[in-house]
Amino acid sequence: MLLRLGTVPTLVVSSPAAAKAVLRTHDHIFASRPHSVVGDILFYGNTNVAFAPYGDYWCRTRKIAATSSQPARMRDAAAASAAVDLSEVLSNYSNDIVCQAELGRLPREEGRNKLFRELFKTNSKLLSGFNLDDFFPSLARLDMVSRVLCAKAVKQRKRWDKLLDDLIDKHAGKAVTEEEADFIDVLLSVQDEYNLTRDNIKAILMDMFEAGTDTTYISLDYAMAELVRSPNAMAKLKDEVRSCKTEGKEFVTEDDLSGMSYLNAVMKETFRLHPSGSLLLPHFSTAECDVEGYTIPSGTRLLINA
Ligand code: HEM
Image (cartoon, rainbow, N blue to C red; front, side, top):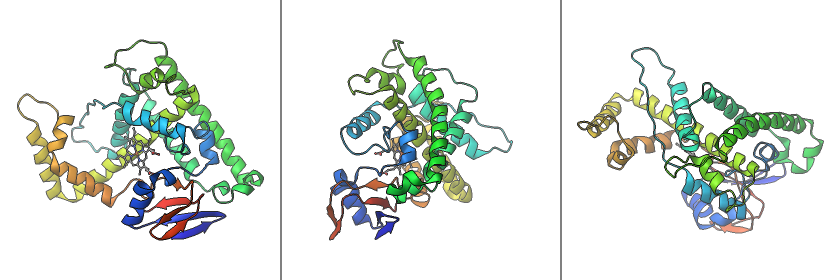
C-alpha cells in the first residue's frame, strides 16, 4: 500500500512475500534510513548503526557491530517473597547485560542504570514525537515546533556526551588483554582501521546501549507475563530449565541454550505475539525498484508491518 504522508511517499509492506522482497532480494535498495533532523543531532550526524544512510560508513559500522559485540556474563539475584517490579528488574538486567558487553571491565556504578533509563526514555520521546520535517522536509526551517524539538535534542545530546565521554576516557590508553576487552576497548582498537571519529564511536555506543536494552527487556517482560498467564507452559519451561542444572552446576549457561527447545519456542511465540518493534525502523529506498509487480520510486519511505 503506497501512502503519501505529507509530501513523503510511504510504502506499507504487509505481506511476507513483499517483506522478503524488500528485506532480502532487494535489500541493498531498501537498506537505507530516511533522514531525521532529530537523529542528526542526537546521533552525531546520524553516524550510529540504526540511522546511518546506506553506503561505506553503513557497511563499516554493521561489520563492527556484528563482529565485535561480546557475549555477556551475568548473575541474577532472586527476591524472596516480596512483590517485585519485574519490568524494572528486567530493564536493569537487560541494561546490565549490554553494559557487561560494552563496558565489562569498568566497575558497576551506582545510579548508572537509572541514568540510562532516563536517557533512553527521552531519546525515544524525541525520535517518535511528531516532527513536521519528517513529512514536509522543505518546510522544516520555517517550523517553530521543529526548532523547539531540535533545542531539546541538543540538550539531550549534551547529557549523552557527558556520559559517553567519561566512559571512553576511562578506557582510552589502557592496555587490556583480548579476554578483558569490552566493546568500548574494541571500538578504540579498530578506530584507525575503520576510520572512526570520537563522535562516530559515541553514536555507535549510544545505539548499542539503547537498541539492546529496551528491546530485550520488553520481550522478557512479555514472556514472563504470558508465562504467568499460562501455568502449564510455565511448569514445562521450569522443568526444561531445571533439567539443565545437573550436579555441581549452578547456572544454566549459553552452551545449554541449543538444547532448550521449549525455551526457544517460548521466545519465538513471545516475538510473534508482542514484537517489540512492530513496524521495525523505517527503511528508505535509494533507487527505483519493482516489488511484486509494482514500481517503487527511489526516495520512498518504507514501513514494514512485522
Ligand atoms: C529481543 C531483543 C531484540 C529485538 C526484538 C530487536 C529488534 C530489532 C528490530 C525490530 C530492529 C529494526 C530492524 C530493521 O528495521 O530492519 C533492530 C535493529 C537493531 N538492533 Fe535490535 N533487537 C533486539 C536486541 C538487540 C541487541 C541486544 C542489540 C545490541 C546490543 C541490538 C542492536 C540493534 C541495532 C544496532 C539495530 C540497527 C540495525 C540496522 O540498522 O541494520 N538489538 N532490532
